[in-house]
Image 1: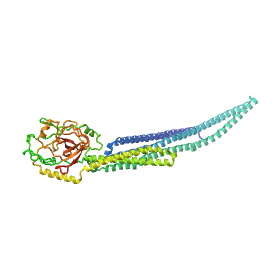
Image 2: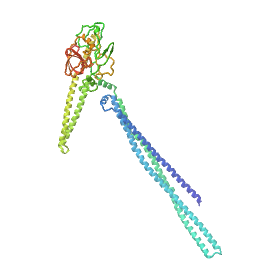
Image 3: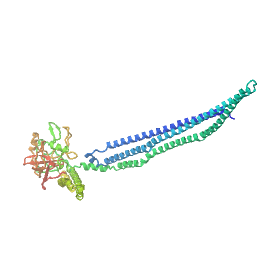
Length: 594
């Protein structure tokens, strides 16, 4: 028989070991849950980073998108601008893929792990509750077994003492028979109690052994197995989430690759030559270049010869003193010994043209630019007409539906809108006819390729035959900006750009009077009609009224000014775009600059 103390010590060690195992498992499983929470937080922060990154990329793309104005149409002509716009759009799609990453991380990992955390915490709590309950039950059973054993031990000792007392009383001759009988009965009672305690102890011992066997071989192993399964599921779930973490990125890679391919194709679509041609087309004026500068021989008596910058040779052979031949400086001002060259101050009407409030027919622009503007205006009007016609067709169909189904609406309610659209279409068609007339006028005036070649030959012939006999005449004419409008410098002083042309007459500046005194009157080479009023406040210019008829004595040399005469006396320059010129076919030196 085993020593009771050794049994009790063994049982205590087993219970202590079991309790320690539960404590270790409880710490480990708690750490596992904390790891899941940490990983969930990691994925959440990654999702926030993707969301913020996508937002910043979208804002960047939106910031550099072209504004909704006329400049956008200009920029769309160039391949590098279109490529940049494509890059911005692809970048916007690229940002969308990062938003997809954030959404998938949230739905496929964060939400799943959050639900799983609640489930695993509940399951863990239940398993440890069952383990503690089983541990408490076995400990309680052990205590009851100990109680039965101590009672059986006590009853056995009491029975032995009662038996010894009875035997002592029975051996004593001085004790009465009644006392002996009483001692005997007491001993029998104690023996019966010891026998009952023994039975109870034996019965409960068997029960405890069975419960202990179930506890260590069934209940506790099952609880440990459930905890192990729970832990394995947790680890497996973490592995699945980590794989999903990578798959979320991998799923958007094809679309991201397409975005990057789109950026690459946009960059490869840039055509430098085509863009440079667009610049040429945008700023091409249509003017013919001026002829070659004549050679001025100061060693001979001054005389004027026919050249590409004079319209007549009627003054050939007439000499003037060298001292009287002064270069005309219109529109610049001479100041004593130093020439302070100043650009002509534009009148208020021309300034309005520069500010964008030009004539409706774009006559302030060079021919080529004017043609493009008129064609663009016609195209815009045709688009508006087509839009109104589509709207009219839709309303007509609606009216037919109302006629066939009166319950859907009143057909008469559509008539006012149809009338308004019809009037608008007629108005737009009249506008188109007006602009088409102006366009035809511009195209008629623009030179053909054969005319350009013929004039080039004339320039070359005249320049080669008159180089050695020409007198010095330098005159500055109003300058044209690249887009055909006349420029005005903010500074009063500017660099001289000389164009070899005829002097400009004026009656308002005394210092130029002596230069016109000795000049012969230039012959008339045609007539012109003023299309717009021109005030002509600046020196060298002449004011004209709308519809006024004038004589042309010097044609436009490409600088935008035509020299005219009124009543055979008053002469001056007017903007070529303000007049309609009719040249005589037999006029010597008549040339057209476009």
